[in-house]
Length: 100
Image 1 (tube, rainbow, N blue to C red):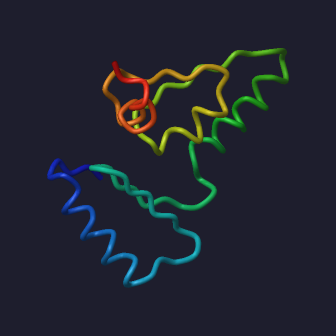
Image 2 (image 1 turned 120 degrees about the vertical axis):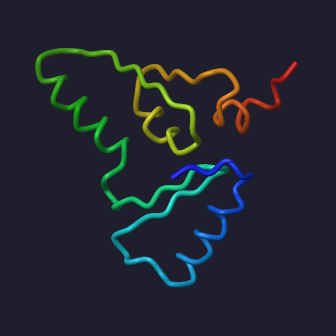
């Protein structure tokens, strides 16, 4: 889910879900104006690892990943190269020390 209200709505939703308690097979991800409720083990990085294993059966490969959210970092780290758009959440949160 995404909400463009500075995170207020998603913050309230997160608090309500945490208060109710999540089943152990579910994982909650929330940063800024992004919110996701996912089944544990069904993560992008797991899918990329599996795809790499399958493709490498026919020889070496090079992987490129693209993402803009902090939640994309785990799968980007699995790739040989990672692309992030300018002014993305990743750049804003991790590259700020290198701003001109």
